Length: 286
Image (cartoon, rainbow, N blue to C red; front, side):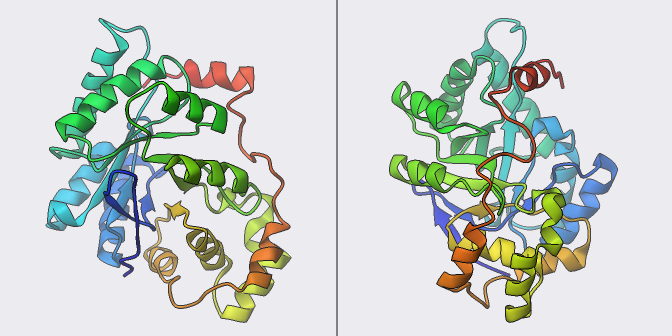
């Protein structure tokens, strides 16, 4: 079990390796999270839109682990057609997530998408932070322009920006900007969901053979060496353990250069600047 952490811009420490539950069916989530906690994970990442917060909460309760030993992240989905105001709806959405998780606070609360009235959402989240119900607040999927705009027109700088980051979309310049602004980069999709034949990629396979590790371990090690927080997902306990076992080797400068050649500079999933994608995400209700 690793204890390696990053320190956020407000002094809160966050385990650099966590366990993600995106796309794990609700009826499998509790067992998967229980197995992850048993394997040694203490950082859990979920979201209202994943529809499995209750199962994550049930696993936390079943584990018997002290609350202070865990770092729990959840995310706010786009608020639609406010009943009073987007700020009020954000507070209600947060209360709903807390209730489902069975917790009295979260360690990190993220705006899930840079869409809709996220300025009102952020004002509400600043209140949640000031009340201590969220130990840190941040964003997800924000491109540099939107991130800078949010920072420069609000009181609190996001602690984290969770974005697609993997060998084929490395976000090097984005990470540098985040570092300059005091924002911690966090990777979603570290394995690119296997796209571009990641697990059989010749560059990654050759590096894995040198170290006696799997391609997955090499990718996670590469991200961690870049100070990128990672939240790999698996429902297999052996893979969960393997994804934590990345602190007994290091990639060389030459190997880092080799991995850098894989960067396409583009998303393998979707572009938040594509009008069709903006409409599709904005129209989703949970």
